[in-house]
Image (cartoon, rainbow, N blue to C red):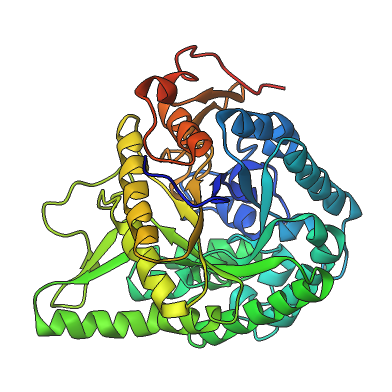
Length: 425
């Protein structure tokens, strides 16, 4: 039996803005409602997890998982500068307590792409004050719930703004889009985290991470704290120019963050695909590769490659905080099995990997792409907010219960055979 180490963490992940609904004080909400908008549609009620978290947690626990990674929404906690919502803090404390009650270790992310509007109006993640302001918020949250958490991530995919800009993945901001963003948000689109990879971004973000980590440590000294990094399997075309371009790419979007992570308790690895750098410097799918619904190369083996890269570069334990597939089952089942086979092999080779969170627990709001892409292992009928377990959820639950890859096929589909909607309270 291909077993995982004792204490290996099995979970699924979400982000507040993508599942809670009604996050009206955030910069993302404003940009979604700009006319015209680079977002396909607004987030609206999302899957209403702000009110339905109890049922959702019970469902994840029933599947056999033992952890839940979620984010604490800064725009709810501090809707206006210096104004702290005790009600929001108490909400997240109840969510954390409900996780423990159901046997799920709570892993909280303090920033998952969204920022309060008031901070965005001051430049958001392009502002020189972001580090101090973000750290202040993290300290407040940690004072309230830090001792109740199993682990904490400061910034989700801290390098994504640099990756987006370097990979030419930014939306096409026309003059009309810029004018609309300014009218809706009071700032240019670059204030939004994902678009903020302007000059000096890495230094600002790493400063924010370090100050946030120190603030969390001061409030909850026993809590394990790290950042998460978007780390894909990176390869170069067989060409000197391509290899040189990849070296420069790594220096810009990985190396500074790997260096900063060396002082953390763990590094969060978030991997979805393999990227090839071509001789002209472009980055994309290798020619002829199978692609997912998001247009990524279907490459479950990328996860192990990223874990090896991060583990060797940082020297700290690896926590897989996101890995997932956009598309339909049963191909998602194949993806999960393939990814975990690689992880198991990496552990056998001495890479210190402590846990795995599938992205995402539920079909949810996928940022600029709206509700089209389906990463979830649990489907949601947004007209009724009913949840429906997919075979991939049952598969991951069976693996988690066994803490091993070799599970019976019958176990992997048992929960999905009923077809019953779950968690509608």
